[in-house]
Amino acid sequence: MGPLTIRLAKLIRELKRRVGPIRNLRDKVLAHSDLPTALQAASLLPPVTRGLVDELLFGMEGVLNEIEVEIHATRTEYGLIGVDGDGDDLVFDLEQAEVHRHCGKRIMEAKHGIRLP
Image (cartoon, rainbow, N blue to C red; front, side, top):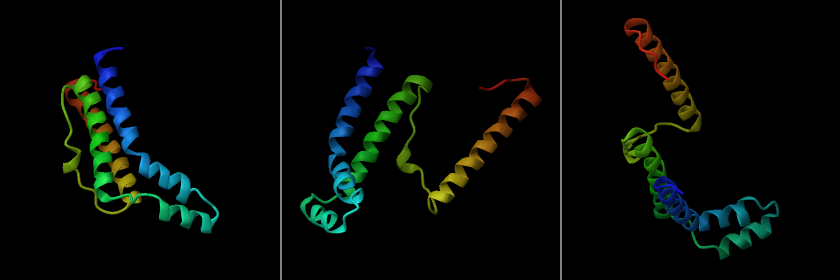
């Protein structure tokens, strides 16, 4: 295994360990079709807190940045990225960003003869 693989494996193992309470909530409550059983299980589980979710997001940021540093020698501060609206708005924004990226590639090729991947 290379150094990147070793670093990623360590980060992912830690992320999997931390996600336990959320996985338990999903498995024992959200995925349960029997309401009384789901409600009973919910009262026995430790709470999923905003702090835990923040920790998990920070851990995922670490994984993504390890890959980004290896490929592009840069990092992204995901905590600075804000999203307005709901999931549908996010999908729309991502689709618009993809259209914009393709337009920029065509302009670079037409104006400067530069082909971007």
